[in-house]
Length: 246
Image 1 (cartoon, helix red, strand yellow):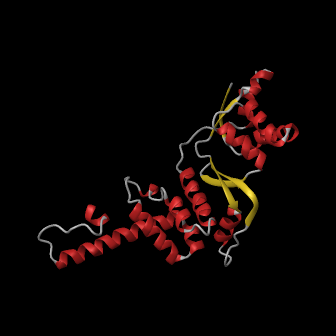
Image 2 (cartoon, rainbow, N blue to C red):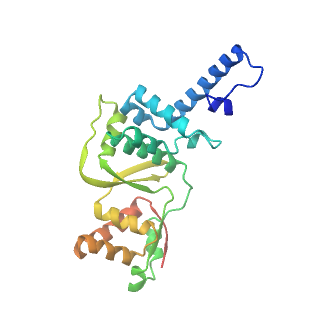
Image 3 (cartoon, rainbow, N blue to C red):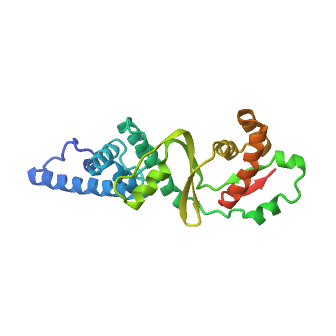
């Protein structure tokens, strides 16, 4: 394995030219399969940058981050960071790759039983006013967010449709892109800024009242109250809430 991974490694004593040529063939086949595995995980990223650029980036990733686990499922770990470095002038590449990688992880995230509207109402049925302020929500382990500066959902859908060259639209201001799994399907959405702020706070275990107060400091009490009410309903409808404590 060391000889397969390290091209410059000295060959074992007694190996002749024929053995060396055979190892080159084996090494090339091994690397080609790894690149194919990356392409299967990041198909739209490969489509967006083109075959030559993707193959070069994939080879760079595999050389600098050789596989360290048994499963090809995780071969893309760190690839988003590699793309951010290699495509520094085209930041949408890393953003698109992040979406594909996070959807990949969401698909295999741990199964949990989420609260529907009836389940949530049953959990808070005996809440006093102060209990709402101290409410802490646990969210689906498939949920992940990141800031993006381009309309990555639009780009992803355009590439999926394969309608010629997709558009990559810069957003007027950075936005939070959320990914999670509904049933067996990874899904994603650009979030309303206030709702994204509230979700980011509560995902770290911040109580509901404290998160609302932090949001009010940024957007005012009226907007914070609107966002807080809308957020709870949206999170439940999306199947993001796993449990409620106080």
